[in-house]
Image (cartoon, rainbow, N blue to C red):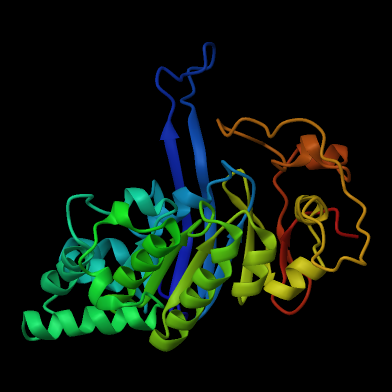
Length: 328
């Protein structure tokens, strides 16, 4: 399915079969539905924040977008071309087109390589720079622009000699060195001190603007996501339950799950008093959930009808979409 959007995530699902997971009496196969029918469009240079509880499928979605996993169904298109086809046709070109920044900077590097060798590798692979001297110049300029001073000293160091914040800056720089069109940032600051988070986020924001790259920013930090994102998608048990402009979704949430999520995160305004919405119980198992709304068993607005059929997605205005039949 081709789309006029720069990025088109088209009905993507990732179902993992449960080992020995047939129903005893019916014989029906069971699956963990980590991602279940996700469809989103993105423009060039847009930053989309994906938020939700741990285990809702955010990171699995990120791995699918980076083609570290192949979806059970659906596909992702970049400028109308299937990423599945792109990966088969030219894996190296695809890896330059799409980059991912992982959560843990300490696991992102070979510990026995210097920073220069680590950053030189993608330039060599993709033949960026005419020779070693030019590539070294590119690396030094990137480190300086990323606030890593003095660059001449940083390149000589090994990963264990740098802080987590410095390593995550280098992770982002390494991704941006090859000038990707699409970047997936999976919880890129969750393991860092609060004092350095803003610097890392601003660096990612500035680089995405400079390169005009589309960015998926995966996080459970709602305030941070609101700050960096143009639009926000809220995930619950593998599905998008709410989507729209970041300020609209955060300031005017419509889905009961989004309302509960935001109410329990508090406000950045110290004078604002927010009533917390208590969500009872645990999320249902992702093994063949349904048939109704996945949030129904915990929802403070649920009716009997909510347990019968998964709700349709309603546009409540301005591209603000909500998967709930209890809006009015």
